[in-house]
Length: 235
Image: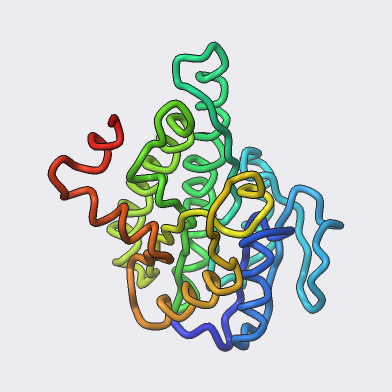
């Protein structure tokens, strides 16, 4: 899919990777960029159309799909983090919230916008997932990793089901980026602007999946190691 001339909708566009996607789309020649956030006034990038969206509100998603009938590219970026052991008392509530935003939200968006994307001739969905869809940091990321694993599986299902209407689906896996969500995490972090540009280039190149940094690529390779990464992390 060509970015130049596209009409894009980016969820969670007010900061971090979402704002980076907005900048990258404008630089690549997108005709129009809808920047979605729960509070549209938080959108500060010039040249975009701010729209209100909470991906946990089905009625807002449905209304937005009716309103934005020209979208050709949907970037499901909105997500939430969270940490802690899965045996903590609050883990189930955290899991429900993370699933609602990180997995069910993108699915609701894809369902709502699939007819619009089908009518555009050339269209695509980008789902922002995580290296932690394939690994769990012990005692820290259990519920978050579960939500991102579900998002990965759903993204694969979307790709299979939307192929018939000509809508491409790209899954973006990335580890820690220099954003508010990873502010307290030590170590090297990827630039969200670099990740956004890389993802759009991959979309134009017809790729189905992006492994955006060395950490993500190493985690992916580790799935087939002996022992597999997800077992070897037990120590």
